[in-house]
Image (cartoon, rainbow, N blue to C red; front, side, top):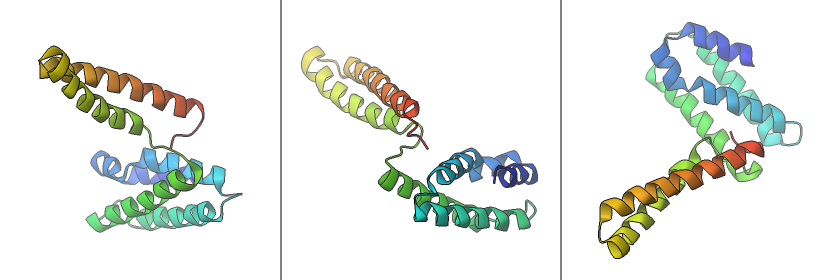
Amino acid sequence: MADRIDELRKQVDLKTAKKLELEKVDRIMKRLEEFSPECETCANDKRRLAQQLDDLLEKNGNLEKNDIEKLKKVKGDMISHLQKVHKMVPEGQNVGLFMAIGISIGTSLGLVVFENMAIGISLGLAMGVAVGSGKDAEAKKKGLTI
């Protein structure tokens, strides 16, 4: 499967490869291969992703916008399954989540405690990034990242 992704990388230009998110496709494929012996949905998704990659390879790098959108939808469905059933998290999800929480808490604390919203926002941002990075590192250590 990795050979299909590498072949697709060679066929398309850098901009298109970035739109296709081939690194993420590779990570999703590895997770599907890991879970497919026990999970029938993962086995079906693995076949579906392989078929999608074959369809893209047949186009010899002449991809249209709907081809990219189709792959994006397939990836989204698979990520959703991995998150719901196998309790996986996408890389960087916790940083974004805790950064938003930290900013909102920091804003209110900054107004109440420091009477300066800017200080609160910066402190909340720093705390959110720190906590989110820790959670992401913990998930990666446990092997729960997509």
